[in-house]
Image (cartoon, rainbow, N blue to C red; front, side):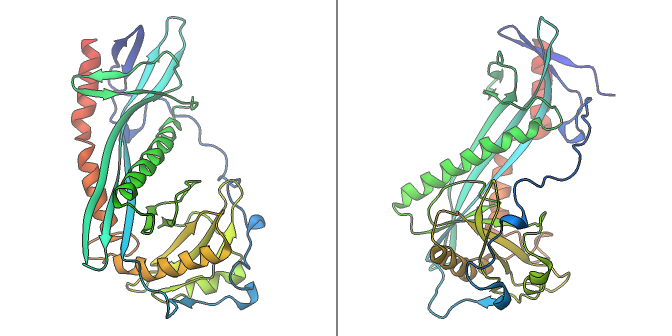
Length: 332
């Protein structure tokens, strides 16, 4: 059982803060949805012949006339649930909410000078709830702006934070490029693009939850050597993208060790997608991490790991924020 709930009054809305730390869930747990999601992407919507006919698929290396870009911008974001809450309305209806902190930032890697600098970082907070009467939640100098969402299931409410984080990543990316005065740098988003329309940008996916290729082509991917990539293919239904796999340098282990999937927006030409694939192959292996420094090596790129540490520090101490929310509610 959780500790006794506490409450916060704001413009007539009474809030109860869950006594459990958010990492342990809430006192209400909805049943697990049945089966994995299968509607976003499917092999039926895959075009394997973008770059090579499937019968001619083979590992590809960096062309001799392609060099790494002078500047690479790497974008990442982090999020954290600081507290789970419930509102209690006079009519007896209860609404779930989460108080969340999130941040996004950009690392500018100058490959000519071998230097990496923080090009921008911004933290934000939010009170995500389907309660239309909710207003901003302020605890001392800390404010969680109310953000109305459609999620009504407490077990999935935390997913509502992701669109806000994605919007923040776009904002800091556009600001970094505006300050640079050009769109010529390669912009690498840590994670899927999910419809983000940014020029000269690729999404960098470290883990593999879906199979996008038929079994007959899997040996091409698992047979990649470091600094080799697969041919480009087009896939997806809801989020349609060009994609390719590449293997980063590092010790060989399991068949998929060191393999990442890279993607770009679908509204570019096939030739432009292939050019981005070659550019990513020239740039990304340079940032591969090593096992003795990072347990997610080599996929967790060195600049991204440093950026994540910086962003998490900007979120503040999770225990202190949860305590502040609970004490502030108790005084309400």
